[in-house]
Length: 339
Ligand SMILES: Nc1ncnc2c1ncn2[C@@H]1O[C@H](COP(=O)(O)OP(=O)(O)O)[C@@H](O)[C@H]1O
Ligand SMILES: [Mg+2]
Image (cartoon, rainbow, N blue to C red):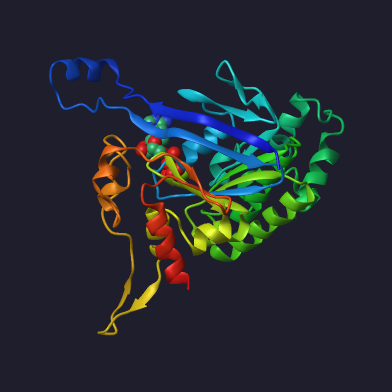
């Protein structure tokens, strides 16, 4: 399979963004945050045509930043992102309509003063995918495709439910006739009952339209359901990538193991007290990440090499890659557990 999306050694640093007053205060020795955040650090990965890649990790690990870099709406500090061999950004400006995005909060991403039909047709008209005269019929077609009443194009966002608004946002993305969708927590703001409907809609659309998709979610069960492969992020780095069944069932990285162990599971202990089994230790600040492997302070397998050397990505025979000095031990542990 050939790579459709190629992320090559991409990093994104957010500067301290000090205003003049803060710069002066910092120079005078005041406590002002002057460090920068390395939100995405040396990430390389590929997504094949028609594939859905899930992107998981704890809050603040850089998932949204990586999603925006892949969608060409945020410039990398270094590295390149290619879609079908062409850069997604040229001179800091998005250079393709082939990738579109769907975000978590459709209320925030839709203009409240615009009829939803106009919101959906704006991009396609600007890019010559439809004409002003045909826009209404064009939008109605996409409304039908996403399960909305085609007669609702003259309504405003507040006249829709949360799930319907997300369908409008999906119609807006699809009306640009993309080959690829980047979905950033697209069901996180919806009621659980509605989440399943929208997830099924995604599955149906990605199959029918042969879309290549990156599906970002902190909800592991959602990612497991929709993804072919999954990438696990920790503090801006990818630690493991592979087919969803292998990564979920036999994690090759101790962080993946800990993350999946932290899915709130009800545990009955000896005193019959119900508690949640969660990951131990704090997530270090991205302003001051640890040396070596970022996970070493929380890792049960850590040895001195883990605090001195950044582990490089290694390929395993089962189509996955992992960045861990002790992946063989972890792998043996996972298989022991599974067996
Ligand atoms: N525009 C920005 N300016 C400064 N820092 C940012 C900006 N966007 C994200 N960050 C920082 O980058 C890190 C990763 O954020 P984000 O990509 O939103 O993570 P996630 O989506 O996994 O929760 C966080 O430490 C966040 O505070
Ligand atoms: Mg996010």
